[in-house]
Amino acid sequence: MNTDDIRFDEKGLVPAIVQDAVSKEVLTLAYMNEESLKKTIESKETWFFSRSRNELWHKGATSGNTQSVVELCYDCDKDALLVLVEPKGPACHTGSFSCFEKAGGSQTQHNPFSILSDLERVIAERDTERPEGSYTTYLLTEGVDKILKKVGEEASEVIIAAKNRSHDELKWEAADLIFHLLVLLREQKLSFSEVLKALEERK
Image 1 (cartoon, rainbow, N blue to C red):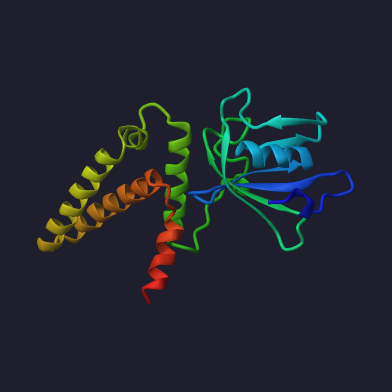
Image 2 (tube, rainbow, N blue to C red):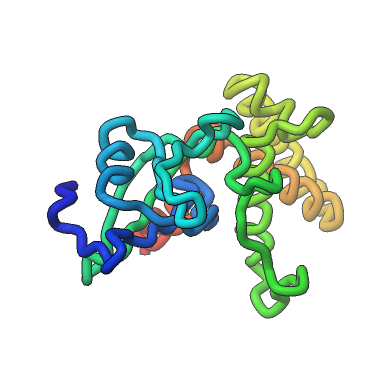
């Protein structure tokens, strides 16, 4: 990316939307000036300009919660940036995975498949925060061999439940399989949206 192409505002700033490259969760909205954008491009980690402190800041310089840049894009007017990252920890200074939350903490109910994106988001949080005692943390820490073993076990349980025509058992085993597949996708740095695109291509 050529910084000369970016249309900075009258204060020399451009808004930068930071998004998890895997889960697609929006992590934060910050601002960059030309210098911080150049540092972001050169270091492949996010740098921003603090409007309150009037200075550059390197995300994670003190907390260790850096963000590795996967892709950097600008919009059609070249006056806004989209930064896809792999976060090394929480994005928010409060310790939350993202600086954004749903108004009132309400959950959207109209889409029954939203649970998949919600679960993917939680798995992404566990991956970056690694809370002690979490089963997801355990799987991701153990690595791909452990995750594949669990995927194989759950797939076998699905087959057995289907052969036994046990609908209740099949329901729960299928849920376990989907969970472990989502963990596997996270470990492999793939998102569920990429799987959906692959399904679209099979039509």
